[in-house]
Amino acid sequence: MKIALFPLGTVLFPGGPLPLRIFEPRYLDMISRCLKDDSPFGVLLIESGAETGVATTVKIGTLARIADWYQGSDGLLGIMAIGEQRFRLLNSTTQADGLNVGEVEILEPEELCPLPDDFKPLAKILAGVLDDLGKLYDVLDKNYDDAGWVAYRYAEILPITVAEKQRCLETSDPVQRLRDMREFIKSVRGAEVAR
Image 1 (cartoon, helix red, strand yellow):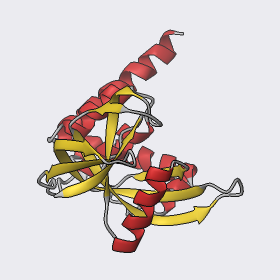
Image 2 (tube, rainbow, N blue to C red):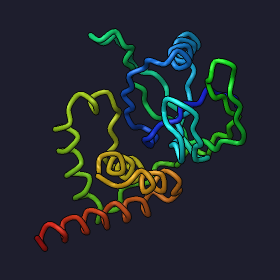
Image 3 (cartoon, rainbow, N blue to C red):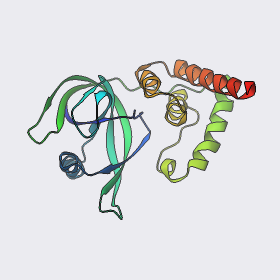
């Protein structure tokens, strides 16, 4: 499968929101084509380089589909995209307009994994947090009974490094992702208690 690529300084997770403001001509054209064809684009974390120039990326990313768009008061195009399946980048080329296009392999979607009982308190906390975050998460389908969905949402909202977020994206075991998120929460709470 060939897709347009959007290297970013952030990690997009399946089922997660991605608000973007678009101003570069290469990405305005890409968004226009994606809207016209109802096709996704690929989001990959930048390893080196910059969002507005040449960048080297990781190999595992997430397809993004545009859910909504608007013209900002500053004249910039704003979009809200939602993460879909994970993919592996096999190879990429740069077009004359600077847009990166890649051949990708879609990774098997995770099967629903019932949330283990000992993680149910985390799901309850998450529900309250997402309600507080409001509009950004209003557009998402919520599934607090699925371990993978809960783990991805925590990976989005917790203040962990982008490298840690990428590791979560690459982890195929949803319960392991949940364990990792719980350990991070415990370490933060321990640091707060120590102050």
